[in-house]
Length: 383
Image (cartoon, rainbow, N blue to C red; front, top):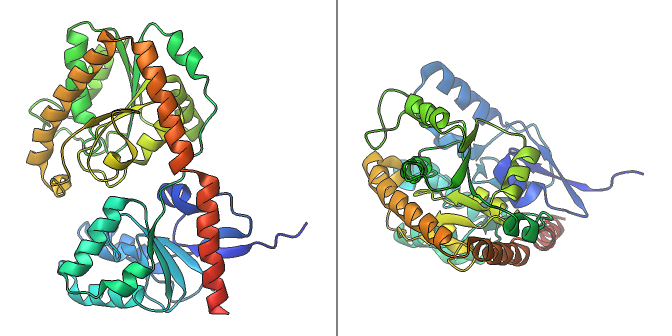
């Protein structure tokens, strides 16, 4: 049977693209990844010199070799005159506007032009930051915001027997997933569990991470470098399961078996893994930074209130180390509170509410209908 689906060109088929559009159950559309020559050239220069501005990694240009009727980018804009849609985290174009005024002017002209069919923010916080940046830079926001909407990432809910998981467990298992270990809250988690293990509190910890952001040149919070952390895993090998990397199926299975997710990131723009934990019946501990405070609350999980004023913390190591102490103290207190209550019933109720929320707010079927309608209208205008 011939495939009559229309092809949408994308710059990559990576994790963010999959959660936001390429893996959705579209009826009429499919995707093909186009070779971005500009990104390849820049990356090659970076590998050779070790020092280059990565701004242009968020610009797409193939000089132009591809001929898709429509393009859908993540955080990127095309430098050619082609019809496109951009899904974004914070800004479009996705680079420091004040650092590259000429390039930014070109990017703003593109998203303000007839070639830009739609801008899709993945969160309310991203939309707000984008709107405020337009106003602060004296850019007429009316036309741009009229084509900007919010569509949250899509996560399928897995079929988990929550009663079996929570009512038949004698030990609470916590899970952390994040390769960028230092900015995802990994150090704070180790600080907390080091204290809990010293108190001989009966909990288990699963860590899935390549430990990116760690080396042996400088210790985080005066204690933790890569060797110290690996020693920590070996010391508590009866209570800590460490995996540098897992397949997606193996990862989802672990999330489905764990009782509480850990994603206390002090600087993440979204935190997709928190959504995936919730979709697997695993209520999660997050911060309130950016979108984490949108998808999580204390009814279906636990929220560490740091406030969104710490927008620059990913560039400021001192800030992160201060926040690590706050997050660690919160984790210890929260875990003690869980164990002091009726943990099985408490966690079961939160897990049910987390899944209910995901089904309602992050539905792949509903988001496919929304984005498919955007494609339909855009292609119709282009005829």
